Amino acid sequence: MNSEQELVQIKTLLSRLGASDVASDVMARQLVKRADQWVEERGINRVEAMRQLLELVVTGRSGGLPASFEAPSEDN
Image (cartoon, rainbow, N blue to C red; front, top):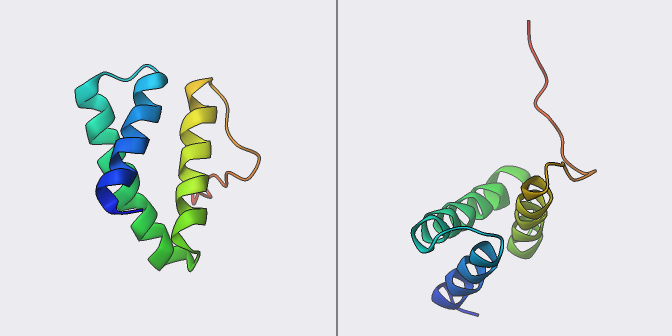
């Protein structure tokens, strides 16, 4: 799959979740960028990074957090 096909698929998913065309485009591009960052930061493969991000989006859409979500620690 090329990057344009990936963007189209992610935008379609976000649109189905209720995002406007403009918002789904912006969010899809941000998700792709963040997935690339996670590959570098976390040393996971790209498919896993995108799976985790999409899980976060879908679960967050309904007001929850995935069980695998790790909140940042609070340093006081």
